[in-house]
Length: 261
Image: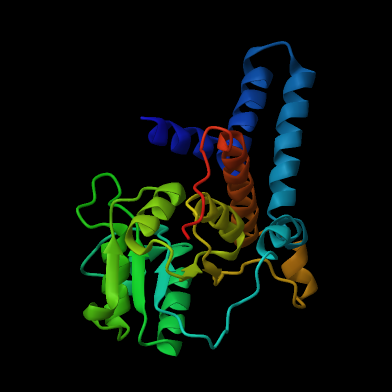
């Protein structure tokens, strides 16, 4: 129940639904009350914020600090396990396998498979429970996509019970104990993920994927014209910031686990 409530409340606080609700309040005030000035201020402010969040310079300035914590991992030392955290997914057997990994999931898997090709002796671990109403788990879908890209089934381990990052850290701890491993997740999610794994007494090697914030040159019109992709970057920055805030609020309620000797 708490998990569902967290997802619903968190979803409503993301930029698009939150600003649409603000606009609705402004329209209601304009249409059905005498508080015309308040309605105009609310509606205009929500529209302006939505506009700014849909511009590349604003969106990527919000997102970039969340992605700068860890560099891309290209180490040569031996790796026995590569853990790829779950993300958005669906399951339609008529689609190309990779189409079933939504949003951040496919870039995470691609980086996990890249790291596995560099370390083919390693086990590739996918995490993620089945979403409501779906008979196939996130971990299972990721495993099927990896196999379609040439990873043998014998090299794959599926952890298909965790529903969020905190549970994923616990499941990996139960499986690997104090064995070192690569941790693959989105660059903007890595800091929060590392914190959860540290709370379990683990010290993963961060291997970030799915970097989104663009710092390379863009044309003037790409920066000046609002676009859904930039709003999605703002959405991701806000989502991750909410996640870090929730993690900080819970830190006194979740005792840290001492590293195993």
